[in-house]
Amino acid sequence: MSEFDTAMAVEAEDGSGARAVLGAGWVIGAAVNGGVLMALGAVALRRAVERAGGHGDPLVLSAYFLSAAQAGPVRLRTEVLRTGRSMSTGQVSLLQDVDGRPVERVRALATFGDVDAQSEPVWLAAEPPDLPGPDRCVAAGRESSPFAGPISLLDRLDIRLDPATVGWAGGRPSGRGEVRAWVRFADGREPDLTSLIFFLDALPPVTFDLGATGWAPTIELTGHVRGRPAPGWLLVAVSTRNVIGGLLEEDATVWDSRGRVVAQARQLAGVRMPSRPVTASAAGAAS
Amino acid sequence: MSEFDTAMAVEAEDGSGARAVLGAGWVIGAAVNGGVLMALGAVALRRAVERAGGHGDPLVLSAYFLSAAQAGPVRLRTEVLRTGRSMSTGQVSLLQDVDGRPVERVRALATFGDVDAQSEPVWLAAEPPDLPGPDRCVAAGRESSPFAGPISLLDRLDIRLDPATVGWAGGRPSGRGEVRAWVRFADGREPDLTSLIFFLDALPPVTFDLGATGWAPTIELTGHVRGRPAPGWLLVAVSTRNVIGGLLEEDATVWDSRGRVVAQARQLAGVRMPSRPVTASAAGAAS
Image 1: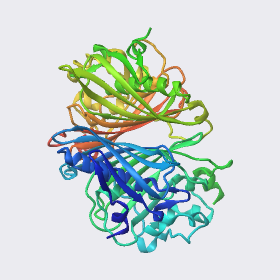
Image 2: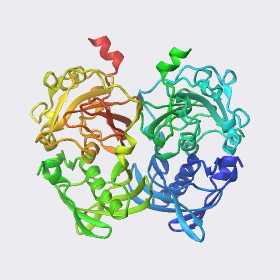
Image 3: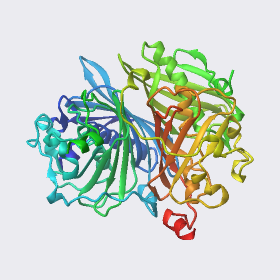
């Protein structure tokens, strides 16, 4: 069984509950990665929706992050709000016991349907960016930067950053607010609908490209699944256009190995900007 | 009292409930406008969050549309999930009685905080598009097109469409998937945080610009509030990059009269594309 499938193993508890274990291998610093939590929530809710008679492919999921999840047991509480012929909607909460009482980590709403019935024809689609192949990109391993040490998550992934958007790793952020990378699971597991939800938040935060060195905690993330991914590398591009006060939006687009848009996300995240942030014009003047 | 404030009048019921009335003046065809429902949900949840001791400005709200709301009474059920020093998160459901039993229309999650503490400094921001002033744009009144007849909502609004993105009204959609407009309340009420949530879904669907003539029902919409709007016109730009199968994402950005980004949204919506849709290249070839 692949590492990701082990992480997604959900044990049914009763009509509206399930249990799982968050592994220590999916941690960023002091918290379990948000993408793992979203994907796990989608797995539990999918089952509840299918039991209620609905199609079970995630089409859209909105997750609100309430407190930092820790490695260890987690309970999933599901509620099916509506089942329909083509789409069904539900809610899922992830809870962990802290000092004997349940603390909610994430609450999410999601709509499920039949993704294959919604992925043809392609009337209009974002073109994949032009970047070198994975072998000519920069591997983002745990040893690649001082930031990366505490990120056990990086061992689960094979991330190859576009050389044009990796200046920040050498102290030269571009200031454009863009990061692009090829990504796949390190153990060779192929992407599927559930893992798309995970990959929507697997890249380094786009704020690294603006000179911020701290993490950018997600407040809310909404992901859309637009197609079933073909086997092989995924190409993920993240960008931001509005960094205001201590908040930014981060948009992600995911293409599969055929160049098809298979997922999108927008998140609202927090950031502590450096007192003299790098902007594209300043970076241009300095080079 | 302005029309919008009348629509937002929420009467507290008990600890976690409230009542309101959806007016017939906010209808698009057979359903109450989704922006009104989202804004009303935000008003009810704001009160619950403030009662629990949290800051009450909406920062992000994700609404899932479950069934079409009708003019008439609506119940709002709120739940505060977490209150924090800077941000608090809650959930709200809008329900209407149908044949004597409650039917859920919308469920939403939202995070509240202090928007003024999050709107300075502007590190990076999307520039407002360059379009003619409101007086040189195209008024989108109820009498302006055959589509607009059943849309009582249009009487509440003053929408001035950019001539460059209004070709669809005369049967010549551009195929670019873009609509831009100045917008304000018809009765002169100034924009505020609550109405920003409403304005995030007040423009004609961007699919009109791709040759689709039917409505594009919202499945899910997530809005971010990025600043308190100055008095005057709002400028709203909506666009899509991915129309696949029967679904599209529609992104909205809202600038205030000072040219500041004050809100953003992305929604997943359904669309029935014409058998020969207009694309930008086809539109170019035809002109």
